[in-house]
Image 1 (spheres, helix red, strand yellow):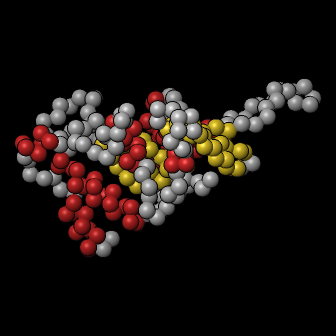
Image 2 (tube, one colour):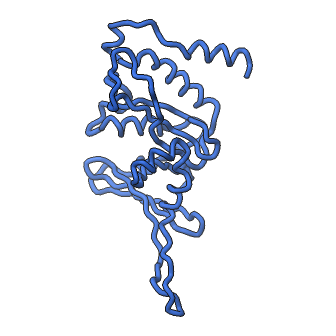
Image 3 (cartoon, one colour):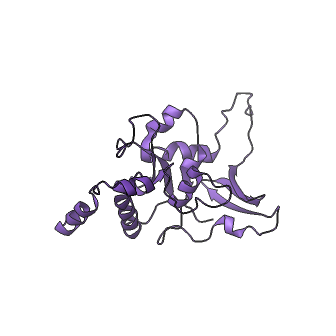
Length: 222
């Protein structure tokens, strides 16, 4: 590590002097500058790979005046599976207004996911399937991707707002030609989830004991 890099880290990795006024506006103001500096710098350094993973990061810092309870601010982290590098960080459930918070029907967690997955200047394609959906109610757009000899489809449609889902399909036989039972293969999207979910923290997903598809975001070109 160069001296300049070390010096830059030391400049941003500090706590601001306590201010009651700032605390009222933003309980996380002491670490906000570090998060913003980290996100701005990483966007200039790395090009995301094929799979991005979103999960919560373990965090012990509560901030001034925050009680030591299980319910506290939550840090969401975006990681690249191929390099295991953290790419972006964001906070959930803190009162400071941020991008997408004021969009109609937007929840705090959904807004956080949108901020983490916004267009990456040098990597993620600018063409978004959601942008292909026309303004009329009921409009839809479908894309297909051949992945490992399996066809995966993604479909976006407009109801009150644009919604999207991903699916894969294929012919399944319960019995082979000799009458023996044939194991049913899981859909490709499930296999991809199991393969790449550990990039941030596999323990969180094991503890939840459920599959959450929003954790895995594929940046393949369709």
